[in-house]
Image (tube, rainbow, N blue to C red; front, side):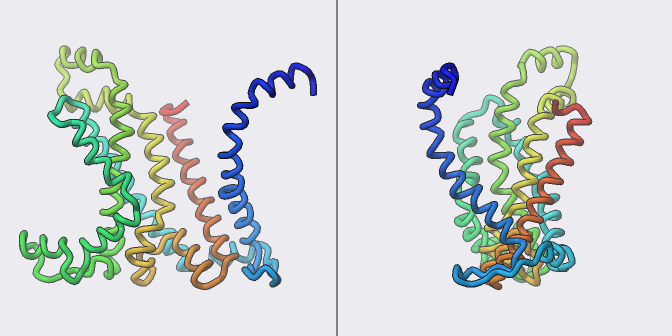
Length: 300
């Protein structure tokens, strides 16, 4: 090793030692399982270490692409994404604008809006399952006995047309706080002088929002939309706990379908192929989003 390189190595050795534990954990618990699952997707996998796994080539991927349930699950996550991402962004931005102003107990409101974000998906799923329970849930009680909007209980999680929108409501509610924090941080970088100059020129609140706030937030909007699309495509816990992908696969997602095939049906190779197709779809959608925004000049 050249002397200069050796000196640089020993100078940076403490940094390498600090990074090493995280790198080992990443290689052990993230990278290795990803590579192993990718290899598994080309086999009729036998989980018995003493057994033999049959090599299938790309047959698992071909089977998935011709599987109607796979495409139904894909359609479900597309609808879930379209239903939750714009709503989360719009509501989160609205709350951020409200809490960016001088307001009594502003810090308390920020904490309250962020609490759902740090609450476990498992806890939230069980709470919403209780709220939307068709046997005396609070939502049915409020709609029927308080507002008198409905005259009977609704099978929120058991109806083909209601199950997915119900899960969307939960996803929107849980994601508002995260969007609020990101947009609030971006709003606080906007120079107040710009708004003051616009007000002097006679621009109203709506005009300031359209001509100052939105253009300034474009890079943040791109970032948030990409992250939310990835998260929406990978939604798993609510469907797994509350509906199990039902009724009749109405809330099935690509992740729940891959999990069910692997751990319920024992077809680990096919389940791995489904999840890697899911990863490919996410990469394509995220790439298209970034490319479109790059062409518009929102990102460099």
